[in-house]
Image (cartoon, rainbow, N blue to C red; front, side, top):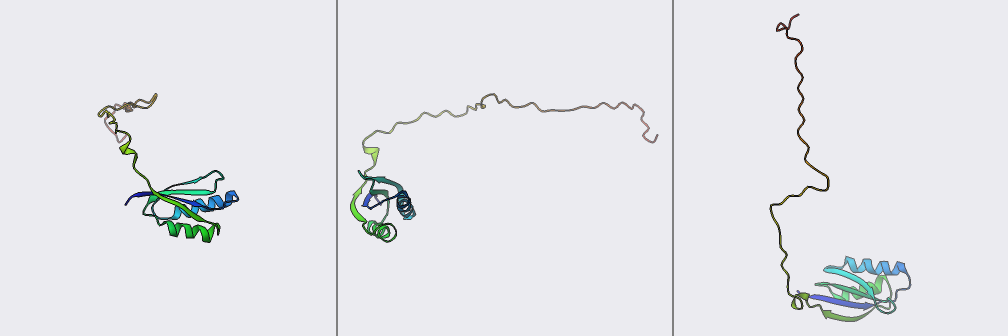
Length: 122
């Protein structure tokens, strides 16, 4: 499946409706990111895989605003084509202790027997 970006124009008059719109979009299957965009902050931009734009728009119409319109659906191209991958060097086998932490030495105690009498009955 290809990653797609869906833009839906919704009349959002208050922060409560914005939160409701974000909640509805986040519950949808396949959503990876949600943003409120546009000049008037009246567009909900949803990015993900395998989403149904018509179903998402109809749920906005039912639960947030009757004036929800599907603006555009476009395919998102991966950024790997533009930038070459850089390999990260990894160092293995080195263990560093956190700041001012050193392993504590084992504590042993020895108590000498001050009673040299071998007879324990008395």
